[in-house]
Amino acid sequence: MSSKKAPNPIDVHVGSRVRLRRMMLGMSQEKLGESLGITFQQIQKYEKGTNRIGASRLQHIATILKVPVAFFFEDAPGTPEDASGFGEAKPASYVVDFLSSSEGLSLNKAFVRIEDAKVRRRVVDLVRALAGEEV
Image (cartoon, rainbow, N blue to C red):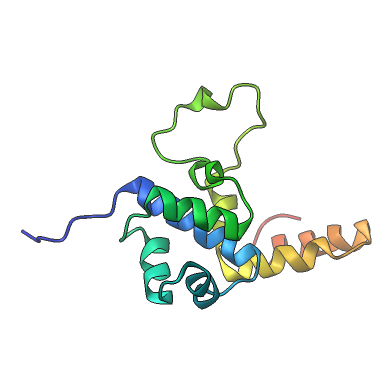
């Protein structure tokens, strides 16, 4: 039996949301760590969920990343489905996973800069064809 305890799913989720927002801003782990007065290795541990983020540190991270603290808990595991009330529908987890990857984030940033709607449609068709999906 291993003495290593698996990270709490909430800690993993919060960490992944920290990573998502940091990447959306184009900020490095080192830069975030410097702003917090900690090492980039500690940021890595937070983002993987292996180290839990305390309340005051999470508030500081939210300030640096310019989001409300609630951002880190959106779509968290164990959240009741009806907790959002009349709010917008929650995005599918594959969207969050996609935007959490460096490729997905880069693709999204480039795609939204394409002004011509016909060109955007052709890019979508190309990606669907490359994925082996009917166009």
